[in-house]
Structures are given as structure tokens and as C-alpha cells.
Image (cartoon, rainbow, N blue to C red; front, side, top):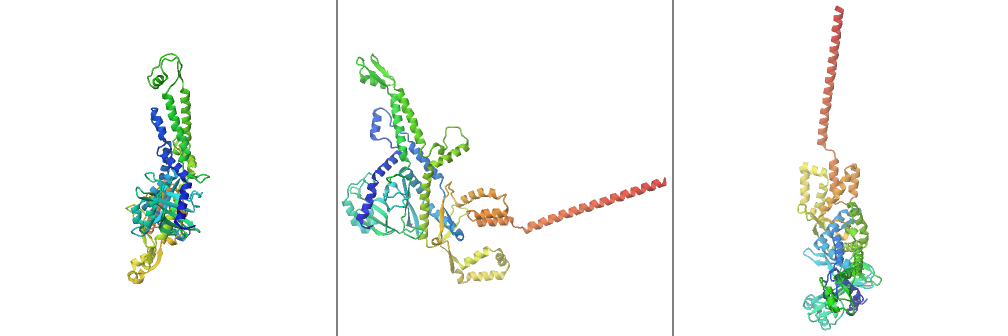
Length: 604
């Protein structure tokens, strides 16, 4: 593949020419979503008939439900380690990716891309990089559908088989000269050679490589494959603005990649890409037309006028069009058109039913006229999710691609020590270190903090305290012995679990714990520990330590229990002694009584 300007321009023009009809239909799809469903001629005809040009936009309602569904199903990414030793590093990777997503307003950009997928059929996000105060950070940019061009021979929904992709942008000539100071000749020549072409409209609708009247020029940034390697350059029609070079963005394998991540909802056999609106246009047109025709038949009456009629046909027509019109004379017959109006209204109901069954149907929306229980509605919604399974798969794949590209940028550009905030809870602010150096002193203190015996030894032994202070003051203690949370050394798998989004890590942890703890209450301690250890809870080591502390024997409690037991034993022994004493006394009394009785009997 050549790198010449003419060859790259031909690639771009091939993309716009082949997809011209597709993009015109995509523009129509957007107009229908926006409620622009009647042509100027149709509006004029309705106005002449005295009818308001009313449109009942059911398409927007259907699409908006899916847009709201995406907002309710947002979920933060999670990184899972590929080996047991990287579990802590995977947590740091999760925090880093979430930090970038929050900083770049990823939720809003994902929603914009999702709308383009549903309406025009294709949404795209560029995962690039930008300079910040801390260094080079990942940057997310939503690419409007009409500013994206791509290999028209690509057939896959994620464009993974595309040979090239790019972005087209309009610049004021002076701004372009300032940005690309060494390419003024190419910009001026493009302005001078401006010609009309049916591509990528700007506002107002100019479709040119340049707009001489407004001194604007069209610039394309293209990523393309050459011998299996992704290259990039920036150019206009008459020259390069940025010379061709290997793509500066690396994938997870360290190879140059295309930073544009895109997805399409549907692709037909001619490689045309389109969204959910396309199938709703015909039912929506019928709704508009049938309602307008039905209203016209209801409000207008037909008459058969004979040759002997007193009134002229024009006057009869005007009178019949009035709510209180009066016609008189013989040879005039008012025709019954109620059957035609009824048939139009019946077809109108069928058109409404048809569009209701498409996309987010009434079952999925939980809108059913029948009196149903909450469980029945939930079951219907679960069944309705089957209708939008493909939609959610497309969005999920685009989201995963973006997350993986974000992590690739972090691995590539975050090579210095960085600290990221992982929660917005002001009462529990926590930071995670990326590329964090660990000194000998840090390692020793961590060992001491994890060893209770060592802490007790230092607390009770002044000599140990002196030796620790001496070591900490030794210059060797400040030497770096290892690095922690180095992105380039962390291998992870990124997953998302579609569900309600949680604003903070603590909220997510709390939500998970409230679901797990009820099941742990009745479990034996060993099984409870195994369940926590196998879970994906953050900071589960602390939870296990708390559980062990609850189960560990308490010397003070044991001593108190022993004292209580001894008291109970003494009390029992006292009772037993007093009982035996009472028995002995009773026996003595009984013996003395018997003796006395015997003596009395003998005396008698």
C-alpha cells in the first residue's frame, strides 16, 4: 500500500463514494428520530386541505427507551488477574482504568456512541492520548457518525477486518496554518482547487474538500494497514500535514494499533450499516399517512351531483366542507364514506401495533394494558430482553474494546510514579500508587505491621526500638528494592457485568457485602472463609482478619467465663452441702423422735 497523498485521497474518496447512499439513508433515519418525517410537499398539501401537519413520533419513544436502558445498566470495569500473584496488581489496574473513565467522562461519551448505533447504525470512540500536568494520559473522543470513514469492504460489526479507518474534520484555514505551520502550501492549494463533491456535509451543507467563501478546508486523519502494520498520517487533498508514520498507539502485545474503536448494529449483504430506526420508518410513515387520510375522510364529505342540480358543484363542495353547510335542490346525493374512514383507522391500528412490536416492545418496557402482578411483569420484561440481546452485545463489545485500549495506553504511557484517587467518599479518601517504588524501610515496616509478635517485641524492648530507629536512619534503608503496580508488568482480563452503576468503590463493596453476608451467618467458619476467599471482594484480607478476630479466643472472656463457672460450681456445692446437712438433721430428729416414743411406750 502506498503512502502518497493521491493514493490516500483515493482511499478516502472510495469510502465516501461507496457509502454515499448509505449515509443519505442514515441522514433520513436521524431526521425521523428528530421528528422531521414530512416533506415540504406533504406539509403544503396538508395545509391546503386545512389539516395540521401533525406527526406522532413513535420512533423517538422507542429509541429513548433503549437510551435510558443503557444509562441504567452502566457498570464499572473490573480487572481480573491471570495468575494468583497479580491479585493486588489487578485491583490497582481496576482503579487506574476507572480513574481514566471518570476523568474522561466515559459514561457520557458511551451514551453518545450508543445513540449513534441505534439511530444511524454506527458509533465510534477514539482512544488516544493527551498531555496533562502529570504526564501523558489516555484520552477518549466520541466520533460523530458523519465524521467517521472506513474501509467499505469491511463486513464485521466491530470493523476488525477494516484495512483503514479515519476521521474527517473541517478547519478554518488560518487555524489549520497555525496547527500545521510547515504545510501552508498544501492548505492553500486545496482551497484554490476546491470542487463540488457529494461528501460529508458541514453546516451549512457544503460538500467540498474546501469552502473558498468561508476559507475552510477539510482535513482527514487516517489509520491504515501496510504489510500488517498500522500506519497513520494527516492530510488534505493537496498534501500531507503530518507525514506517514507507524501508529503511536500500542496494543496489549506492544504492536501498533488502530485507536478507533467502533461498532455497528446491523450490516446487510451490501455492507450497508444501519440502526434500529431503519425498520421503523415504514410503520411510522403509515401511521402518519393513515391518520392524516382518516382525518380527511372524517372531516370531508362526497356528493354525486346530477346535471339538473340547482347549485354548482364548486358551491356544493364548499358547503359540504363547512360544519354547518347547507345544500338544496334536486339531483344531489351525499355519499357515505364512513367505511373508508373506518378501514383507514383499522390500518392505522395495525401500523401502531407493528411499530410497538419492534425494538423495545411493550413487554420489555413493562407497559401492558392487562392487569398483571409484579412478578408477571418482570417475567415479561425478561422475555422482552431477548429482542434487544443483539443490541446489548454490540454495546458490550464496544465497551470492552475501549477498556482494553485504555489499559494499553496506561501500560504504554504511565511509566513514572502516579497516584490515582479511587473514591469520591470524602470521609474515606484512598489513593493507589502506580509504578510505586518500595524501599527497604517500606518493606521492613510492612513486615512489622503484619507480624503482631514483632510489634509486641518492639513495644516492650527498648533495644529493639533503638535498632529499628538506627536502621531507618541508615541511607541503605531508603534504597529502592522493588517496584509495585507497574502496568507494563501486569497481565489482566477486563470484564463488565451489566447492571446498576455504583458511584463509589465503597458503595459497590457495601452492595456486594449486603448480598453475601446473609448467606454466611449459618455457615460453619471454615466454609465462610472459603466463600470469602473465592469471591471478588476488594480488601477481602481485612474481612477475613475481622472474621478470624471474631472467632479467635478471648483470654479475658475465657477468664470471666471460668470465674463464672467456678462461682456456679461453688453455689451448687453449697446447696448440696446444705441439703446433706438438712437431711442429716432430719434423720437425727426422726431417730430422736423414735427413741422418745420407744421410751414412752416402755414406761407405760
